Image (tube, rainbow, N blue to C red; front, top):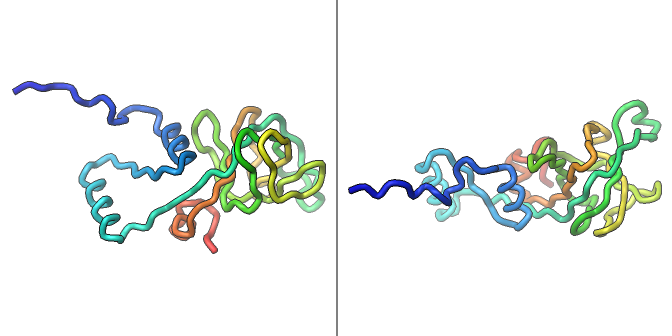
Length: 170
């Protein structure tokens, strides 16, 4: 017999980047599979305890308002500071990963070198405050106004597996 359709609600063709960003910000784990039997294999491995769980938590999100040249002597001539306002949570220097999100897509992730408030190095900044962020010794400087920077805590398993580019567990 017929029956047709039934494809609605499976997430096909949607904006996966946005869905992943929203899900991870809610603390949900996402397994992305194009082939159903690979999903079945992973679910079976998880049930058997053989698949590491990669957890991450976004501790804070900030929006880039402006950028400024780095004035640090040792980094002279390279890099920029992003002047940001904390939109939610706390931007925390201790977070293993900082991400730059543009139009719902993660365009860069790596370490934060500096979090500054009124020219002083700080460990964290709260919602509705403004600060300066330097990523990877100025190695990332392609900020645009409106970009979102996230500070993210990740499980050791996620870091050790190398899922997070350029950042090691410890």
